[in-house]
Image 1 (spheres, rainbow, N blue to C red):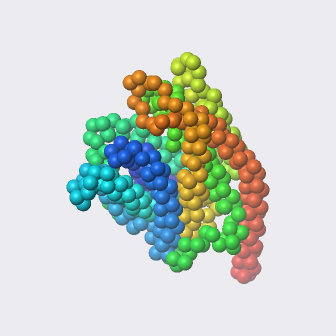
Image 2 (image 1 turned 135 degrees about the vertical axis):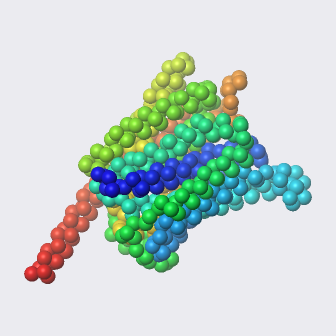
Image 3 (image 1 turned 45 degrees about the vertical axis):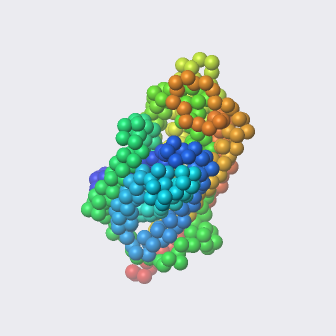
Length: 460
């Protein structure tokens, strides 16, 4: 163990499996949709359906897989073998094409496209099942099992940065890879990396000594029981905050790169530099601050975090000027502000969820976490964002040779304003969270004192 109480091997598992998992999810979110649009059919209804069904599949899978990992008292196998199969499904995704389906089933071209779209949606859901089993359910439960409250903030700070590093890697480098080796090569290479990661896990992952076999598959509804919700109010209020924050993110995040390329007219290099610098600086700022959060009240820190996030989005809403250099500078500055708040909220809320998750019940509660962190945001956020885009109906400008991938209308600045408004809702929930957390902590301390007093009397 290091001085923080988290061993080197634990850090290896955390960073390796956390980063590879986030890269896989980033590719799914950024390139699976693009793959369908470019190689099968420019059918946005199918793309939307794929995103929504993927969110549902991820949530349902995590509910069952997390509960099963509790029942069997084993996270290691779920993570390792889950990653191995996850990699295979990602690799197979690249082999789907209308041409291959047409030849395989002797179908006319139009029918082959329709069948391929169905197979793509089904394939994405299958991939999500194994990814959520390994990453969302087992890996997240493993982190909760192996961290303690006194150093959880630092661990959560690293976890919160990993999705942004993955986004930076995927957005910055995978586009070049697609041009060089194609989608089939990209998905095959990524699948191989995920599978190798799973094989490594067989040898390096160790379950917490405190992990025990507990519960039955009936516990899939454990997190929805009124008695459980009543017993852990701080946990569920934190999940509510995650849900609101997630919706705020999903209102604008799916359209961020397209907005920079079309509405602002940034080149690929320009938006990569702006996006990359914002992520790097935001991640650095949060890593520097992460260790200190363990010594402070995490619930109260949500106030400045939400404020920073909303301020960044508000600045991005106004950051479009006649001068392109001014737009680049101002959008980049407020992008950094937004990213800083984005990571800080993720880290604080993630640490609070782990702090208030009851011991030995981490697995069966991962599905509930997914409802608030994935299902609700992925269903609600894009619906709001795309409704605003359609209402604005901003036509595609003439960008000359700029590399543009969009529909007949482009993202509108109002998605950032709507995201800021959604983030402001957090200020109505945070006071209730602070009050509830304080009351729950007092009750827990009183209970522990009573148990210690009774134990002392029994010894006497």
